Image 1 (cartoon, rainbow, N blue to C red):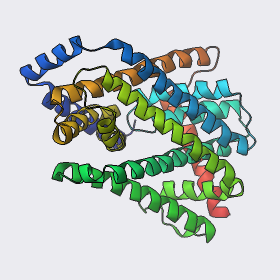
Image 2 (image 1 turned 90 degrees about the vertical axis):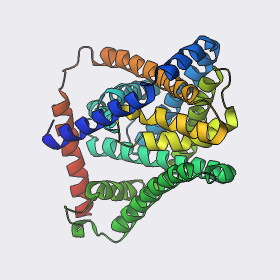
Image 3 (image 1 turned 135 degrees about the horizontal axis):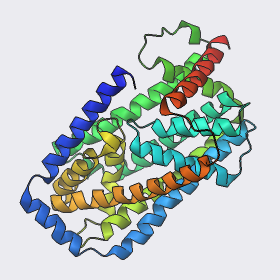
Length: 345
């Protein structure tokens, strides 16, 4: 790990610890959480757990489709294994893309002659998922416009998410322009987002002829988002006094989008504070209950991540092991090849 990554990780760890202290330092709130936990109905955790499992199923179908477009034919179960491995590493590696690196590394072992294709399939997979999230969130924001603009704090969070979405759309637009007018060689390496722009541009170049597959990937992402919402709503329903499905629906896109930013480790602390603050401000939900709802949803995700850890152990059995530095180095070399291909096109 280089110095820059180490410093970022230390800052994320500091933010995580500070937020956790802020959330749990009050003994009264800790007592209230324990009381609410004692009244919870654990049966609601079953559909919550299954809903998140369906998120991973949809994710495997989406990635398999995008790889197949480029001639990579992996069985669905094999793709699901790679998704589960990525899930495991996403939880325990700093940053939000650590799992993608590992997925790419092992997928390349499955298709060693299609390294660039594997890398670009993950880029498009991410973009398709983000575009679907923007569509779903836009619908939620319009439906709950009055609530989400009623309070300064909630307005600020909503605006922050809109800025993140706008930045994504700008990246896509710039990538399209760079590819369409062959501007890759003119973009300075010092430009912010240089690598992301070239990766996106190359993805456009490769997937433009198969745009129907990209549309299909976005359509697959719609039920995927629905299952994310269902998982969080079922987790909340386990607790008496929960704010209800409509209230949860209004805040889920904001909480999930902001907590996915590399602010803290795996979004821990950020997610809990956002849920508790927004549900309390908008719907009067006790802050301790908001924290419990968030922790419960995260615990379900951790369970699936641990299952991914078991899948990882079974998948790697008999294979030559690789360190994280080696994985980063190989994937970095593939990314560099993709960028060179875009410059040469």
